[in-house]
Amino acid sequence: MSPDPSLALENTADTPDTAQQILRRVFGYEAFRGQQQAVIDTVAGGRDAFVIMPTGGGKSLCYQIPALLRPGLGVVVSPLIALMQDQVAALRQAGVRAAYLNSSLSLEEQREVEEQARSGELDLLYAAPERLLTPRTLALLERCELALFAIDEAHCVSQWGHDFRPEYLQLAELAQRFPAVPRVALTATADERTRHEIRQRLSLEQSEEFIGGFDRPNIRYRVTRKQNARDQLLRFMAAEHKGDAGIVYCLSRKKVDAMAEWLRGKGWPALPYHAGLDAEVRRRHQERFLKEDGVVMVATIAFGMGIDKPNVRFVAHLDLPKSLEAYYQETGRAGRDGLPANAWMSYGLQDVLTLRQMMDGSEANETQKRVERHKLEAMLAFCEITGCRRQSLLSYFGDTLPAPCGNCDTCLEPVQTWDGTEAARKALSCCYRTGQRFGVTYLIDVLRGKDDDRIRRLGHDRLSVYGLGSDMDAAQWRSVFRQLIARGLLSVDLDGHGSLRLTEACRPVLRGEETLELRKDPARAPRKRGADLRSRFDDPADERLFNALRACRRRLAEEQGVPPYVIFHDATLMEMVEYRPDTYEQLRLLNGVGEKKLTDYGDAFLEVIREQGVDA
Image (cartoon, rainbow, N blue to C red; front, side, top):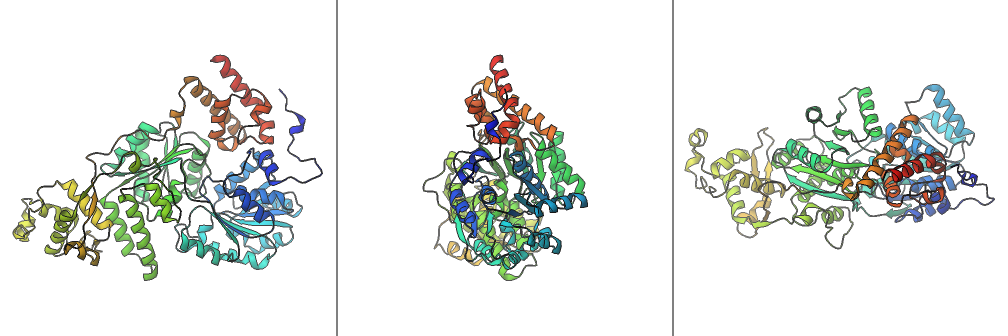
C-alpha cells in the first residue's frame, strides 16, 4: 500500500501551523499533557520560562514546538554528547531539521552544520555549554536569526545540586548578548532552594515558572533491607525483568566492575560504566545499551543523565544515594514511556555508616556540609518511613499526593512498627558506658552478653548493660542501631572504625521524655511480583505480535544506525497490539505516529500486523 500523498510533512497551506497541528503532524500526539500548552504559548510568545516537569513528562516538546512555531533557529543547551545525538536522531526521524555541534564531528562536518545554521536550513541546533560559549559559536549565532534558547538539565547550574557543572554558570551570558531572544530552562529535579538558585544564576528572575508536578505514577518504589544485596538483586531481576533493559547503580568503580562480571556469569547481558573506563569503552557500552534490547548497565552515577531510552524497565540501587534529588533523578530513568517500571533499592546499616562518614569527612565548608547533612537525613527518612513512599518523595519537592499511592512497597505491604523506646535506651546506654569508641558489632556483642575475650579484657562484661539485650537477636539490634543513626540520635566517628557517639538529639529519649516507634524489619525480604511489562499480555497472540513488532523495529533501527526507540516507543507498539490497525488512517491515530514516520514505516508495521493476524 502506498501512502496518501497528502501525508507529506511539509505544510503547504498559506497559514502557519498551530502548536496543536505540529503536535499531531510532526510528533504524532493528539493532546498536550499537563502544562505543556501553557509553556509553549509563553515561549512562542517571546517570553522566558522556567519549567520543572517529571522525566517522561514531555519537557522536550516545550522548546521543540516553539522553535518550529517561531522564525529562526532554536538553540538547545545539552550537557552530554549521547543525549544530543539521540534527540537529534529522533527529531530527524520526525522530519525536523535538527543538528548538533560537538567533538564527535569532524572539522568538515562542523563547518557543514555551521553553514546550515547560517543559511536558515536548521530548525534546532544542539550544543554543550562549553561549545556554545566559544567565540566561534557565539559569532555564528550573532549572524543567525534566533527563535529561542533552551537550557536543558538546568539543575546542573546549582552548586547545591547532585549534577553540578561549572560551565553552566556561564550561561547567564546569553541574556546579556541576546536580550531579545526568549530563554526556557528545564529540569526534572529541583527543590525550592535549587529552583531559586537556578533562576538567579541564569538571570531568569522575571521568567514565568511552571511546576508540572513530580509524580511518576507508573514507577513502583521499593526499598528492601540489605541481607545479601547481590543475590537479592538477582532474584528481583529474574522474577520480574528477564529480557528487560535496566540500570544498576553502585557507589564505587570497583563494585561496578565486580557486579557486571558477576551478572554476566549468571547469564545476564551486563556492561560496566564508570569514569575510570577508557572513553571508547564507555562509548561502546552506552551504544549497546541504547541500541540493543535487554542490556543491563551496571554503573556509577557517571552514567544516566539525559539518557532518553524510554523502555528502561527497572533502576536498582545497590548503595544508598546521597540525596533524594539524586534518587529521584536516577530512578526517573525508568519507565519514560509511561509503562510500568520498578525502582528497587537495597538499604542497610553499612550504607548509613559509609555516607555519614563520607559527609562528615568531606572538605566542603560548613554551610555546604549543613546542606548535605539535611539532604542525607531526608534520604534516610525516606528509607525508614512507614507510610507511603510516594507521598514522602513528593512532599520533599513541595508536591502533594492526597492519598497513599498504592504502588510502593509500604502501600502494598504495610510496614509493622513497634515501641522501640526501651531498646533504644539500652543501645544508647551501651554506647555511652563503653566510652563511645566502638562500632555496632561490638556494641551488639556487649548487649547480647557474648562470651568474648576482648569484652572481658576491657571489663565490659562487668557493665550494667552487659547481657541486657539478650532477648533480641543480632539482626534486630542492627535494625535498632540503623534507625538510631538514620534519625540522628547516634553519629559516626571519623576514626575509620565506625565508632558511634551520642548526639544532643538522644537526650529526650534517655530522659524518658520521648518515645520511639521503630520499623519492624521482616524476617526476610518479601518476594512479591511487581511492575512487569510482560504481565500486560493475557493472550499469547498479543505477546507474539509485540515481539514481532519489536523485531521489525530492531531491523529498521539497525539499517539506519539509530536506537530502536527512535523508530517507535514500546508504548506505540503496545497500541498497535491493542488496536490492530489495518490501514494508514487507523495507524496514524496511534500516539507517536507522526506523518513522516507513517510515510517511512507504515507499510512495514502494517505488514507485520497482518502476518501475525493470519498466523493467529
